[in-house]
Structure formats: C-alpha cells, structure tokens
Image 1: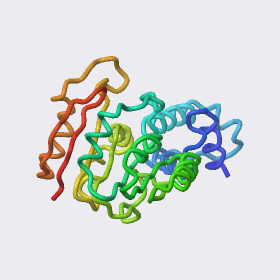
Image 2: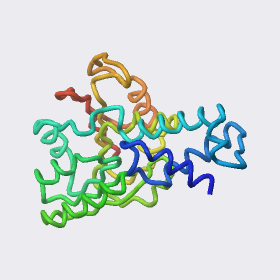
Image 3: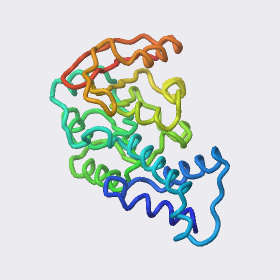
Image 4: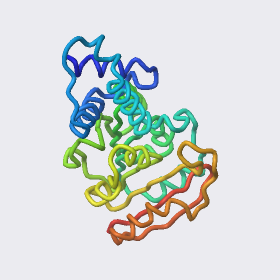
Length: 238
C-alpha cells in the first residue's frame, strides 16, 4: 500500500502522469535497497521525513530524464533528418522510447513495419489508433528498456534509439553497451541532442566520446552525421 501511495504521488506531476507504474516501482525499490531504507507507519508522517523527501526528489529526477523531459518532446524534427534515418533502415523498425516521433516518420514510409515502444501508457494507445487509422503495418506497446528483458522485443531490421540513451544512462550506467549488444537487429540509429544535457552548450559532431567508446568495445562499424539539431550515429551490427 505504501509503495502504491508513493507511485501515485510521484505521478501527480503533469509530465509524469502517464508514465508506466512498473518503471516507477522499480526505481523506488532500487533506491530503498541501495540505501538500506525501510519505511513503515503512517504515510503522512513518513513523507515529512528528510530521508523520504530526498528519495522522492531523486526518483522524480530519474523519471524525468528517462522520460525525455530534459528536452522539448514536442519539438519536431525536419524532413531531412527522417530522410536520412529512414534511408538507412530495412523493411522493419523497432523504436525504443519512441515518443511522438512516429506520428511524423510512419507517414513518410508506410511500406515498412513499425514496432513502437514507450513507457507512456496513453501515448501507446494513441499510436495504435494512429496506425490503424492510417493503415500502417505495426503495433505500439509499453516497454521499459531499463528493467524489461530484451527477449520481450520483436526482431527488426533496424532499431531507433533517438535521444533516448542519455536518459537511460542516468538510471543505469553502461546500459548502452547492454542494449546494443543484446538487440536483435542488423542496424541501430542512435541520436543525441547537440545541446548538452542540462546545459546550453553546443556539442560538435565529434562529441559523445563515451558512446564512441561503447561502439569501439562492441567492434561495431558506424558513421556519424551532424544534421540540424542532432548528432546521429548510423551503426552496423552485422
């Protein structure tokens, strides 16, 4: 009951209200285990404790990061970005942490099959309705990239990780290596904002050295393109 109350209160923030409960639950349990904390008793008294407030603040911070709140999720990409991305894919696409981008790119190439996943429950419903209405071959589903097993994901020619990895890394360090290594696909398209996370500092094409080290350790070939407001990695797994 206490865990349920915590989840409900975290979701009172407008930007987090549609986030999947399972993701928040995992973060709460993770925090309590790591810090050897146990809360018991009256919830109203518990939530006034400094220890609880610190936990609450940290979990909300992580939720915002992985949910993409560090960037303007309503900002739309240009035609040029999608033209480059879609030209690199095969017949099927898996988009992890898709956000609202599929509302644009799925209409640009309706010949492909799309698997779209996010931790926003209402967004998943909207995406399925959108694909049905526009006769797009595909499906959307809830998937938590940090906690859910990759075996739950369908096999696709290409995987999109567009402006998603830094949010995932904020929750689980080195998750990028695990994801790229375990994904069942031929190619991966990963992108990053040109603006540093939490700062207003432009990043050059040669940036994200940490991610290039990941790709080097995996021995994956890749090309980097600097297009509009994003740095995009076109990665060959095979």
